Image 1 (tube, one colour):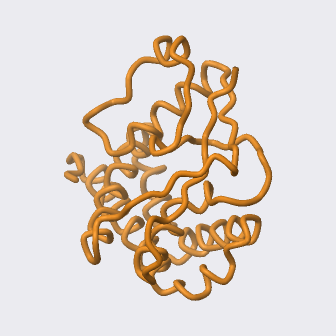
Image 2 (cartoon, rainbow, N blue to C red):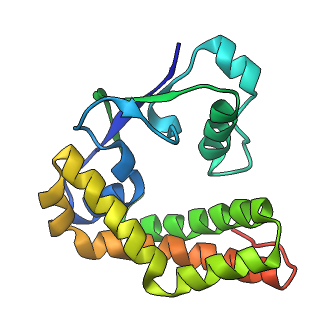
Length: 189
């Protein structure tokens, strides 16, 4: 009766694409044990039709529609259950376009978070933590723990410059959204 979230492997062995994959999907790498997770990416999510109908569609205007859908599911009492043996391969846009995508997704995530936070002070705190190495360090620690759990430490170490660039691009996008929220303008993706 759970929503089942499957693992996401990288479709391709290239250094750059593997690094972007780790930055983007470290929480859902193949390996480790089954467990509840906070979110289910649309690339590998099994949802009973009755649950899907009760929760409503993915917001189509957002790249983070799966985040909103997962939040609705958790708010309704559903568990998002990760099954690391249910693996699909995820394909990437090539090269620098992948980093631009991380930037755009960061802007959208920052917009969502700024709207939820509701106060300029909270947006200012997230902005400061995003500009300082506080959040980057925290995100890298989470990524490292997730790679260790999945047996992907070698891949993380080999692609660390790309992982850092991808996380930095997302944080830059978020920061832009927080600045726009602080000055009273909407952030454009």
